[in-house]
Length: 214
Image (cartoon, rainbow, N blue to C red; front, side, top):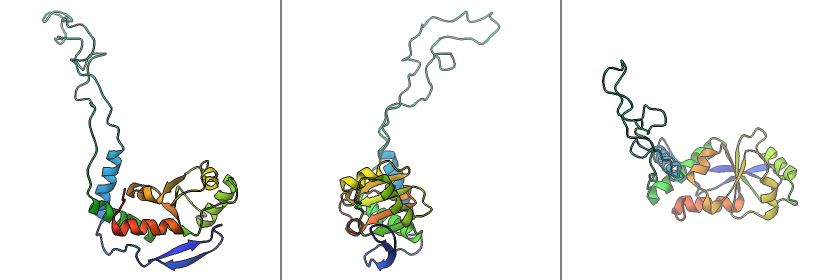
């Protein structure tokens, strides 16, 4: 697989072949990718939403009015769901939404996500992500050189220098991620991904070996 490799300032690029980059034919891995993305989204849910049933809300247990003769529907309690300030029928309760995915599934999903992002032209490699000063303007110019018409951008490196982190933190639509913590969901969420030359080797090793996958 050939990817564009930009200079540190993003001014020019060359194509470089990455022999161990994952490649696919047909629809292999798409279903697994979908399943892993759903699982990772579910694992982020806190699951602490809670409502009170008619047995838990405060209110009198006295019958509202007599059974017959009122000309309206009979009512037995003020705490029923259709009464104001009543309980909630079939409402949410605290629960665990987490889903388990095995290592081979996560490995295949990572490979497919990288392949799809590269084929779509949304994966670029940059020689170095270091900037000379912690200034947003400098880092923003690099992004514009790599992706002139960019939407959201994910920037990935093994470890970020302080200047780079400070320069990128205030740019709207830009997120930073370390290669060791990169997840399948991160790759899917961002249309444009910029990876340092060091980080791309780490990511490919993770995708091939399946070690330390998120």
